[in-house]
Amino acid sequence: MLTLLGIPGALRAASTNRLLLAEARRAFGEAIQTEADLRLPLFDEDLEIAEGFPEPVLRLHAQIKAADAIVIATPEYNKALPGVLKNALDWVSRVPGAAWRDKPVAIVSAADGRAGGERSQFSLRLCLNPFRPRLLPGPEVLIAHSRSAFDAEGRLIDERYRKSLNELMGLLRREAEGSHP
Image (tube, rainbow, N blue to C red; front, side):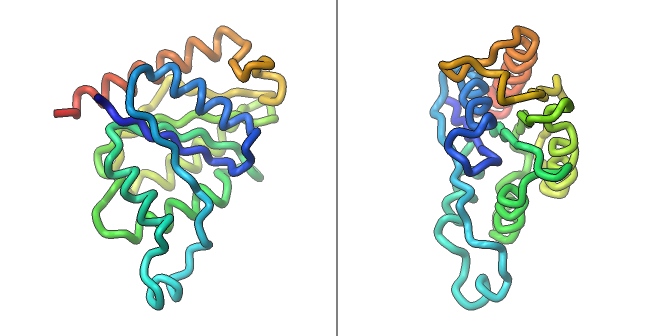
């Protein structure tokens, strides 16, 4: 059975990116589904030298390493990816073992603006490239005006968004199945 890791780029429990991540996980289908917790200390090399890697960082690294596929749902904060997501990437990059290498990764975003997180996805792709995952190029899932994009049950309202998300997650599943022994 495939393992799908969901990484929410927002800490807020009721964020629209958590709703989008839940929709993405449903669209991926049957899998062992885990979720990352990005409540990590701020990256600090002095902390790393003095105390080693914090346990939550090692847990995140292990989740990435164990996943067959990863979906990241990122909000857009000030025209870029959120600091908690960048902080997680910085910490994980320090742990030996190249956790991201060759992992199939899909990026989705929900934002209140009209572009739906386009710049956050762009900046996240730039940050992920050095780790050499297999980033899916699309279809792009950019949920604009996200506060009104979900119904009372947390489901996407717009059929176009659902269609794009279903296609992206189907591609992610195929990538994962192709690399799964």
